[in-house]
Length: 387
View 1: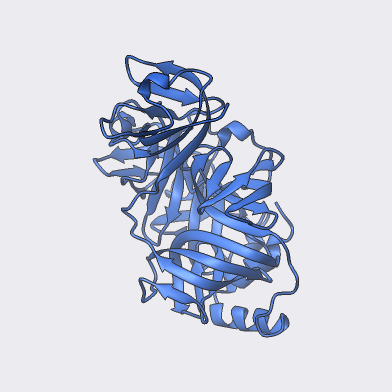
View 2: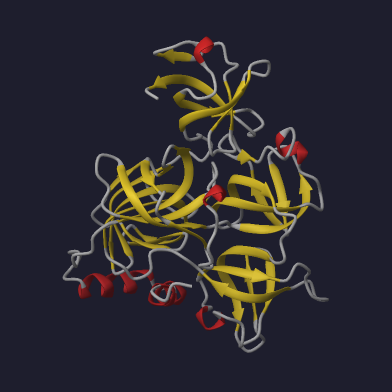
C-alpha cells in the first residue's frame, strides 16, 4: 500500500471535512498549489486506443498496472467499465502519459439474488443500468448471472447501493471485498458496519488503526461470515491521491458525505468546491458528480463540479486494428482487446469506407454504445484510419 495514503486516510476518517480542508489549504498558502506537477484521474474506462478515463486519453503502455492493494496486475485486466485511478504527466490536448494505473473494484462476493436491474451480492444492492458493462461470459447479460456465483463489481459506491459500471465473474476469489463508509464502529469490541453489513476485526489486522467513523475504506474479508453473521476482516485499506499536489485532477463518483460546497466527500476524496462552477446543483449527498480541479495536499480543490444523470451512459470510443471478424454475426474484435464490437445497426455512419471494407488488419475508430444486455459494443460510427 502506498505510504503517502496514510495522511489522507486520517483526515477522512476523522470525518471533519471542513476542518481538514481549512487546515490543508492554509498550510498551502490559502489554496495556492505548492508546485505539484502532473495529473490524477479517477473513474471508469470508457474506451481504448490508449485507455480513456474522464474523457482523457492516457497512454498506459509504460505504466505500472496494479490492484488497489499495490500488487501488480496484467494490462489485459484493463477492460471497459473497469474503475481505475490514473497518475500521469500533465494533460495536454486531452491526452497524457500514465505512470501508474490502479484497478479499484467496489465489491467481490457471492450473488444472493438476481433481478431485472438489481443484483444483490453479499447483501449489498448492486444496481444495473444502461451504462453497466456485463462481461460476455454471462450469456444474455444480467440474466446469465447465477445465484451463488462469485462476481467482481466495479462502480460508483453510494450510501445505500453500488451503481455498477462493470460486473465480471471471479470464481477463483480466495477472499471477498467491500468498499464504503464506516459506521457503528466499536473499537473495544472490534466491530463496525458498512451499509447493512456487519464486520469484526482484531487490532492486529493490517490497516485497522485507520478505522474511524465516516472513513471510506476497502475491506478484505473471509469468504464466509462467522456464526453471528459478521464478515471477518483480514485487511483494511484504500487508494486515492494520497497527500500529493497535482496541477490537474479529475474524479467521478457519488457524494458520500456532504457538509457544504466547501467540504464534502466523493468516495475517498475530500473536495473543496467553494470557488467552483457548479452545474446541475445544488450539491447533496447521493448525487453522482464529475469534479475537475487540482490537488492541494490531497484535497481536490475544484474549479468545476457537474452533477451527472446516473442513467445516461458514456459514449464508448475504441481505436485499433481489427483482429478478427465474424461477417455472419456482424461482430469483430480489436487487436489486444476482449470487447466485441457489433456492426449490425442499420444507422451506422461510415467514414472513409463502408461495411465491405471491414476486415482483419484494418485500423478503425469505433464510437458506440452498449447493447441492451451490456455484453458488447454497438457501433454507431466507424472511421477507417491509416494503417
